[in-house]
Structure formats: structure tokens, C-alpha cells
Image (cartoon, rainbow, N blue to C red; front, top):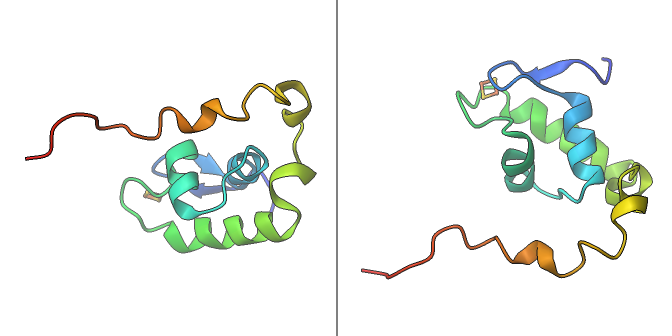
Length: 92
Ligand code: FES
């Protein structure tokens, strides 16, 4: 299986996209869904995406493949959490 194989046809997400997302800090299916949109339509690819995620994490995860890390080092340390609360407002 090549890195360019599409693992989520609905969202046109490849293995490489998942590997890149892990390099950018993804550590769970939730992160992968958020970052790549994989497995957010029909969900049939969930197992493949999860397997790919596990492989990417076991191969060194966030820093081994981090081409972009070098540029962003220092910039994205604390601000990353700022937009995690998508829904602000009142609770009813
Ligand atoms: S194949 Fe991935 S959401 Fe449909």
C-alpha cells in the first residue's frame, strides 16, 4: 500500500494526509477527523483511517515526520488551545 493511496474516498484523504496530520500533532481519531475530515461522511473508512493513524503514531508520530515543525517551532506552543471551544455561549 502506497502513501498516496486514498483511504477515505468520500473526503479524498490519503494515507499521506493522515501521516502529515500526525506529524502536525494529531494523536487520535478525533484529531484526524478534525484535521483531515477523513471518516466524517459515511464512516466506512474508519477502520482504515484508525489503522493508518496507529501506524503513523508507532513510526514516531508528531516529530519524526515534522517537516513543518522546524518553521513553526515556538509559534504554536500555547495558542493552539485557544480555538478548541467551538461553541461558546449559554447553556440551556
Ligand atoms: S469513506 Fe471515509 S467517510 Fe466515507
